[in-house]
Length: 216
Image (cartoon, rainbow, N blue to C red):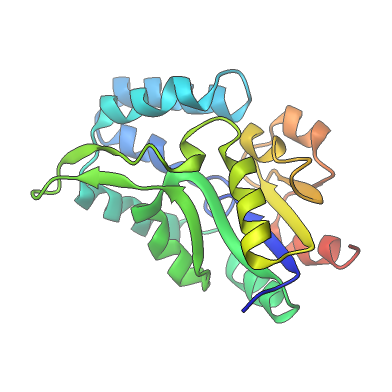
């Protein structure tokens, strides 16, 4: 069913307290975790491009399919406390909700199902017959700089939306400004000053989102 109102939600440090890629790095020991966390932070704060770190982090970790399932469970265990009720309320008010993330589809899908969200735009990892890491699908838009912009434009067209909103904590969410009607920065887990200064609105709990959207 088409909708004229579309809200796009980031996953890591927005819908859930964790950064999935960092937690995968933690499984490989302190050194790998530190390196991955640093690269993730630089990208989230806008200091480095997504292309420059995406494959590097994955090659450092080489996550297995089983480990992605473990991260999926962690997403749910650390879900933002008001996320489920907020999404239910937005859907009742006529919003179509989608998750748009630079994270990994196989890990995010369990969270999406838990939250009642059907559309997930993330990065599909590839595995061999034994569940060992075999790369990622390079056609996934959110694996590159301005990828969320491309997704936002495509979803707006496919849903026939005359109104669209992006919600997230990172630089890639802020960059969607211009391809959506409103960017709402999220600081429930990490307040990134660049995002706070540049977003059209800024919230610390997803429960604050419906009030903002009712003003549109």
